[in-house]
Amino acid sequence: MLKIIDDLPDDVLGIEAVGEVTADDYRSVLVPALESMLAKQPKARLLYVLGPGFGGFSGGAAWQDARVGMKHFTAFDRVAVVTDTDWIRNMVEAFGFAMPGEVETFETAELDRARSWISERKPRGELEFDLDREAGVLTLRPHDDLEVADFAGVSEVLDPYIEREGRLNGLVVVADEFPGWDSLSAMTSHFRFVRDHHRNIGRVALVTDDRFLSALPRLAKHFVDAEVRRFDKDAEERARAWAAGG
Image (cartoon, rainbow, N blue to C red; front, side):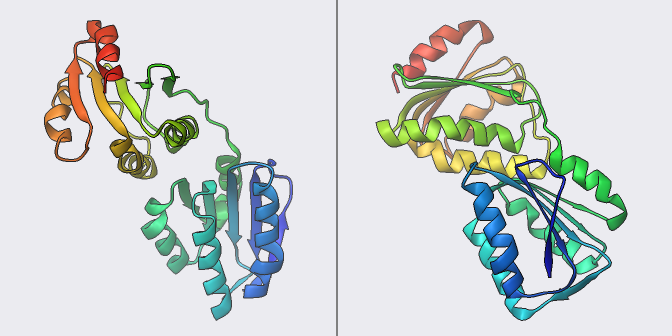
C-alpha cells in the first residue's frame, strides 16, 4: 500500500510504500494527491520512501508507475527516492538524468537528510535574465553554476513570448567565464533548452573575454540555426543592438 507522509511543505508530496504496492494504490493514493497539488501550482516535489516494510510491486503497479511518470514527466522539480533496495537505486540513478528536474537517491538511514533536501529552497537568480519585449531580445547573465531551476525560470517567461510572436530576434549572453553546471540534471536541462529554442532565435551574441566562450561561435554553427557572434565585454550595447536585428 501507499501512505501519505505528513509534515512536509505544500509543494512536496511524501509517499511511503508499505508491503506490496498495487496498481490500485497508485490510482487511489498517489495520482489524486499529485493532481490535487498540481491544480494549485505548476511544479511539485516528490519524496518516495521504500523502507524496510516495502514488499515489492505487483505487475500492474509497475505499469501504473510508468504511466504516472510519463504523464507528469515535466511536473517534478525534485524527486528524492529513499531505499536500501539495490535494483531500485540502480534504476533511479541510471535513468534519473533524463528527468527535467533533480533526482537523488538516499539510503533508509538518510531519511532526515532526504527530507531536508526535498524541502530546501535554494536562492534563485543564479541565472539573471531580462526579456526586452519591444526589441525581441533576451539577455542572460549567469553568476554561478547553472541549475535545473534556472532553465525552468527562463522558459516560463520566454515560451509564452515565442508562442505569441513566433520567434525571438536575439539572445545576448553576458559572462566573464562559462559557469558550468551544478549537476548532470542541470547539464541535460541546458542541452534540452538549446534544442527546444534554437530554431526560434535569430541571433546569439556572446559578450565575454573568456577564451572558452570565445571559441563557441565556431562550434555553434554545427548545432544551432541562429547566427552566433562574440563581442568584447565593453561592447554589450553594440551586441544587444546587433542581436535585435536578428
